[in-house]
Length: 159
Image (cartoon, rainbow, N blue to C red; front, side, top):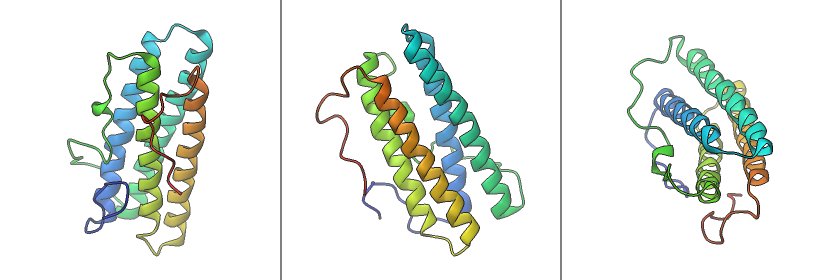
């Protein structure tokens, strides 16, 4: 088990990618719903960019799955690698942003761990690129917060 609390040790990479696809779908839904309740135009613009990035991210994961299996991803699990459903969708915007920063950090760590599980150099490179995309996304999320999330809500970044 890795230090993010995500169980990946004895799971095939195809199943891990399926789980990541579900997580990306949940993320897109979360950001789309958040976009509907944010009133600041500056925040709305950043959230639109995030939803575009998440749409691309999901397509990339689906492409990776096809690359690994030569099949379309079917039979997706009911829950993703990390769940956006755990974030209170009715809370204050700042609290939701703080929670989602923590979730996105877990996702970044998940991709880093997946990259260590393959000997395929191209797949390893793509997974590290996904981890880097997540790092950039976390930066955008920090920009959305007025003062940064409350102390203790977001765990320190993974190294």
